[in-house]
Image 1 (spheres, helix red, strand yellow):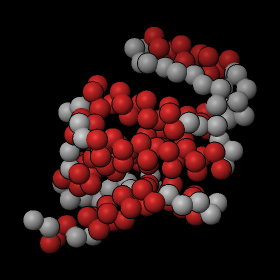
Image 2: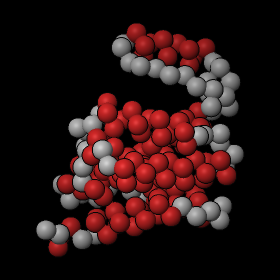
Image 3: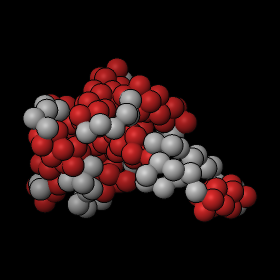
Image 4: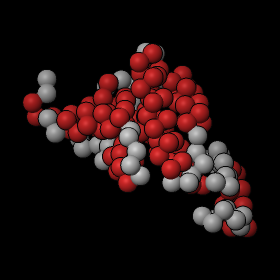
Length: 161
């Protein structure tokens, strides 16, 4: 598929090559939904693990962690839908639920950045969702709160204990 959602022989060839090399390959007819759902997944899991300084399973082990990640997923899907992208919060939440167990000990890159007191990608992930929401006049309070918390964390490394 190209971005115009039409199948191409090149895509089929590349998909077969990656599969033969042992990679899990998924070809989708709606690449924009897949991209936005991945952004929603990252906004939910990366930001919550970074703020809480826990691995993925830590978020999943606590009802409030699951709730917060799900709310961010829902907000992202709402923004996606406002742009005409047919992405679903349910799909993002399903991926999150799988990650809580399948990758329970994994520290996301954003959590690792916070642990090592480095700048994170929050401006591009959560900040990008906040920006797109504002362009459509939408409110994303959970995504925005986590974004704000991470900006405080990032900008106060030198005084943290």
